[in-house]
Image (cartoon, rainbow, N blue to C red; front, side, top):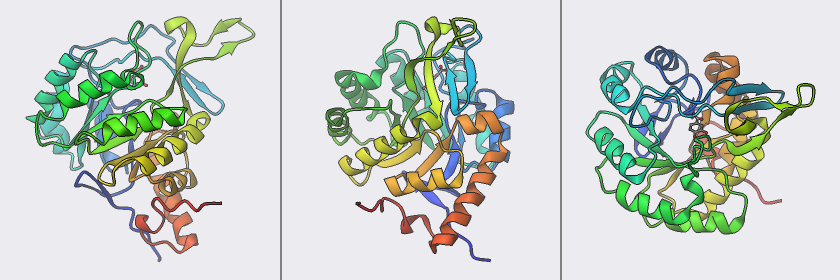
Length: 311
Ligand code: DHB
């Protein structure tokens, strides 16, 4: 049987496959993380954590949509110390562990990154793009704050740090962000987070379909795939070669994953599809990607990675 080598690495951390879960759905509790470990996800990625335990936003705060979902979870999580304590048990499950942190200030991010720098986690993803906390702007849209945060966060230890970015929609923003990222030893970016502050209205009830923030929430799934692809592509062209890219946004089958590979992704994350389908999605998408690459005569990721052909 012809097969395809889907192994990759992020910042020197070997990953058995190109597909992993995204920080977001079903990765908050120990039980959920155990399920991720048992799936074909190549890493165990945790829900973004904060200084303290959070209940999150009032319900309803998530809704499936025909082509994706809208969510305003409000960072429900166990608090970073719980994840810190979990690290040895997570590591014992046999896969690289990536922790996502989402402090409400540079000071909080410094405290959490410092703590995880001393732990056994493999990678640290700092979330600069949660759109769902009332009164808190997305750091990723404030370039000055991104620069000061990176200056502080990239000197705290040797463990590789990456940044989860919001989607950008203007070439000047890609350039501004890439110029900042290239100044610091950021090892990877993860793009894109959900498109923040979108509104879905139910015409029957004449209300928004989720409760927090007057119905404003992050749009996910198929709707955002072209945005995710464009962000991966733009950053691949603008970032130094040693900054790797994890693509995320609307990947629900092997062909979607392949398109992200052409755009330049080194690995991809699955969020909405995992939420809707459950952990079987990782193996299904892996098999579909393998079959599609076999059909093309490709045997490894590098055969197609960053090889989008000009028209
Ligand atoms: C949440 C949503 C996000 O898009 C994110 O990056 C972090 C947290 C949330 O609402 O929980």
